[in-house]
Length: 224
Image 1 (cartoon, rainbow, N blue to C red):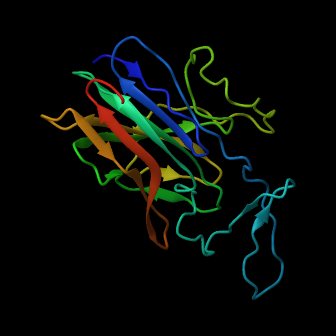
Image 2 (cartoon, rainbow, N blue to C red):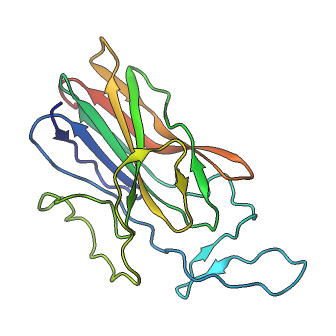
Image 3 (cartoon, rainbow, N blue to C red):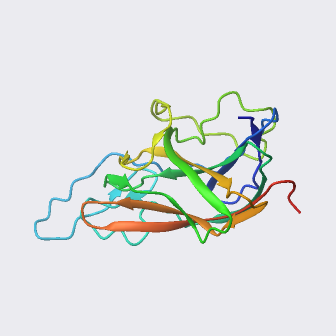
C-alpha cells in the first residue's frame, strides 16, 4: 500500500484527511476545543436541578443525568468539503477531532458514511489526542502555519495511544480523540462521494447518531 496525503481547508471543526498512496506527506488539522473541563463544584441545595460545572475561565460542563441535547459532543457544529485523489491500490483517511465537554462517559457505535455513492467505509478507529490539536508525528514544515500558537498547558498533556477500533470505545469526560475513518472507491467506479460522516455514540440514557458535516469527494485521477 502506498501513501498520499490530502490537505483539507481548515473550517471550524477539527478535520483532517489523509490518503494511503505515494511518497507525498502533508497533514491538516482543525481546532481543538477551547474550554477544557475544570474542577467540579458541588450544589448543596436539595431538590434542585443539578448545576453545571464551571471553570475559572467561565466554561461550563453539563452534569451527569442532565439533558445534554441532541449533540452533546458538538459533532455537527461546523463542516467542510474535501476532495481527495485515490490512485490504484490506495485508500483515503479522514480524521475528526472531538472533545467530551460533559461529565458523561459515551460509548461509540458503528461509524458510517452519510448518503454514500460509489464510496465504501473500510474502517473506523479512535486515537487519543491532546487538547492543543491533532496528534501528528513529525509534521511537515508549514503544515500548521495557519494555526495560532497553542496556549501553555495547565496540566500534563494527555498520552497519545495507538489507534483502536471505534466501535465500543468509551469516551471519557474531558478527553480529546481523533476518529479516523478510512474509505475507498467501490469496485469498478472512478468517482465516489458522501454527504457526511455519521458518528454513532450512546450514554446510559440514550443513543445518538450525529452527522459530522464533512462532504467527501473522491476521484481516481484528479480533483476538478
